[in-house]
Image 1 (cartoon, rainbow, N blue to C red):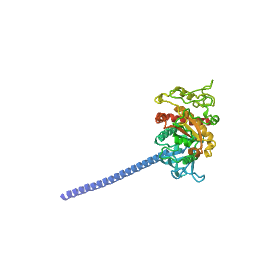
Image 2: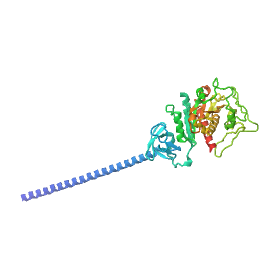
Image 3: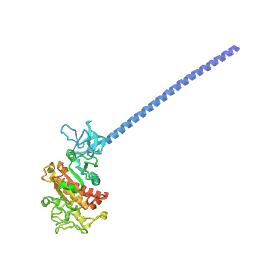
Amino acid sequence: MKKIVNLLLYCFLGVVVSAGVIGMRHFMVQDQERTQLEAEARRQAALAQEQAEQEARQREEERKREESQRVVMVQSLPLYPEKKIQKVKAGRDTVCVYGETVLLLEEDGLYAKVQTGAGETGYVWSDCIAPVPDESVTADEQPKVVMLDVEQNGEEADRISFSVAGNVEKRLEALGYQAIMACRDAQETPSDAKRAELARQLEADIVVRICTGSEEIQKEAGMPESDDGTSDDGIQADPDAQAADPAHADNAGQGTNATPDAGQGIDTTQDAGQGPDTTQDAGQGPDTTQDAGQGTDATHADNAGQGTDADQADDAVDALQAKDVAVICSSEDNPHPAAEYYADSRKLGKYVLKYYQQSTGFDGGEMVESSEQEAVNRSKRPIVVLYMGSLQNEQQASRMAKPKFQAKMAKGITDGIDTYFRKKS
């Protein structure tokens, strides 16, 4: 009986051990399957994360690519192999055209490295490209291209000139023009020949060069001189040139506008029965341009009769002589290429001088035709050089050094350019 009981116990123990072994094995299988499932889940999550990150990178690259896209804003934009203005050979060198899209790779000062739609890489003039607008660019909306240039005359003069040029650039772009800076500081300045070649290649509509006057530069331009930096009664342009061009219309028929002595007002003599011309073009601001014999310009008359502006009360206002403010353009008989654009250059100069004087109160300036200035002679586009004032005149220098007055200088230049194009259209 005892043996039977032991046998039964051994059998029961065997069953228990077998059940334990089977249960343990089953647990191990389940644990292995669970581990495999968790591993697969982690792998799938990692793949999903990697795919999401890849898509995010692609979207970021696409966004950057879109942000790097630029559209050509000038009629003709050459692609240079290096950062250097070079001659362009027709049929051999790549030239981008207005409205063409390029990819900006790098910006470096005056130049930008780009890639064309055909995959060609090179350098272009940075100011000639702009971010792609929301609406497509069409040929009938092509803006007028104005090249702004600065003539270097020394540290203080350059500071004023570059400040005014930058202000003009912003004002022109706000009016819808495409402003191109030929140089942005005195350290990186192409030669006159290179700047003239750039304006020709870009097919700029006009070139406006600004600077402060000095006796040396005025002699180079063929401008008249005086012993003490000013003239006793103002310098008058050649009478024949005045009669032939409306730039002197404000003087013709008005009597002599003599430079006043200290404390005197400016002579505003007008022909009897004639008042200021306030003719306006449709949708445009007031145009104060006058033909010969019409009397004193409305804006000029206001300035002349009032003396100083409120924000200029700390500056004494004396009439500025032609030696200090002048616009130089090519002479009609200039043997150089600039003579071809004499008519447009003179019209441009007339408006720039007129509105510059109105905005600044600097009176007594004149148009000077010259064939002695290299920057003008080399140009194959309409060009004028504006002498904004003289740093040798302490009064003028102190006013031109002020940012608020520089804004007035820029406004006058911009208004002159804008009027030129409105009258031309």
